[in-house]
Length: 336
Image (cartoon, rainbow, N blue to C red; front, top):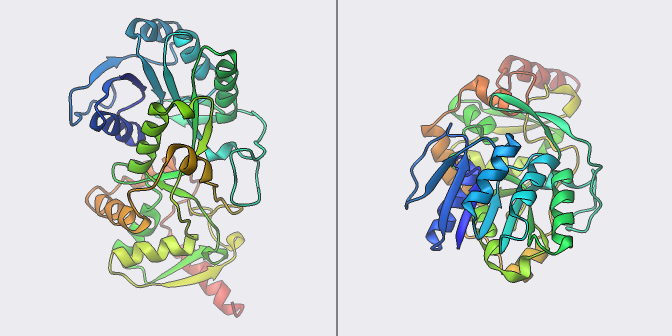
């Protein structure tokens, strides 16, 4: 198919483009031109700002793709522009959503039919601008268009996606500590939280499966690893991959600076039965192999600390070891 990928030059989008190319699709990438990259096969690059909606709609209509993958729809207006430009003109579309659409504190595993949160946009900083963010609102627009019968669509709800190429990877929280020779690490509430993740190449494969399957039309799917580790398990896996050993300490979350990106307020585990059964999805990269690849990339490409902090929306220095050690000493004095 002739596939248009909206936002295909960074991390998840780049992996999606590569997966589509490997499957023999012809790919056009629509992006702002801020991250020009080369792919493994020829790709057409079209520069434009998707939030210049009038021009964006005209560009999409002119390109006239057979299918579209929208990697970065942030709000209802983003989704509506794609629908208005391509309604009645495409055979397939896949729209990237997120597991954060689910209402808080759901029984696990969370199925696609679980309650979702209200569509209340929040302001999200993206590079040089702030945009309203609500994946719930995105999904509502796409579902309405699908129900009208002239916009065949699939929604994928992603977990925390990781892998090489992510300059603000959550794994840096642990990798940097190993590189700094830290022998002790304090995890909120002992690192017992469950946190669903997905390796970027397998997420890309899920997108391709949804794009190619007629059964996926009108459906919503969770995506992610088939196993879910606790936060402690992730810390132990990073240490194992790096040949490191550390003592993991149990410290109440209220006693630690709010800097750990692996601190879910409740268990987050998604039910993958639907995508397995309907699209025959199986992960190709294990948790262990995914972590090995990610750690190796981060060691060679360490992120800027300030960029990492801002991208993770952290108000404190995640590597303030003095504050962390003070919390550990206080716990030990209390006999923790």
